[in-house]
Length: 103
Image (cartoon, rainbow, N blue to C red; front, side):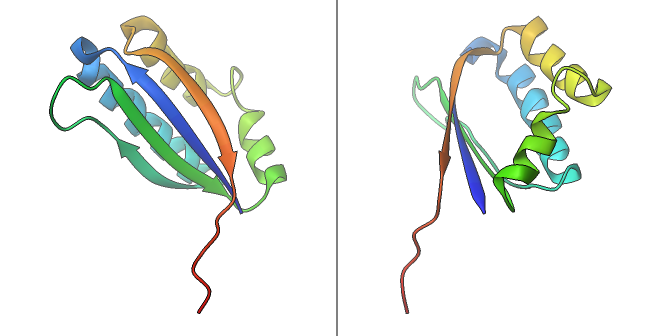
């Protein structure tokens, strides 16, 4: 299992667009073999940070998903929400592995 952690800096004035963008990506991850654990958005205060967690069974599965970027019409449409609304100021992506409590 490979887990992707995405840290987004969002435009607070465009949070509705960000939520549409996030919903689209959650569906795409799930439809293409991954498991999306959700987007975590600011709930109070002046925060502009959002976090997404999703995983794929293997790096190869993730690469098959990534191959659709910029090509598959649904992926292009999801990116269009972000690009046209300006809801994401910047983002970074980190890949992690789980370390769970041994029992």
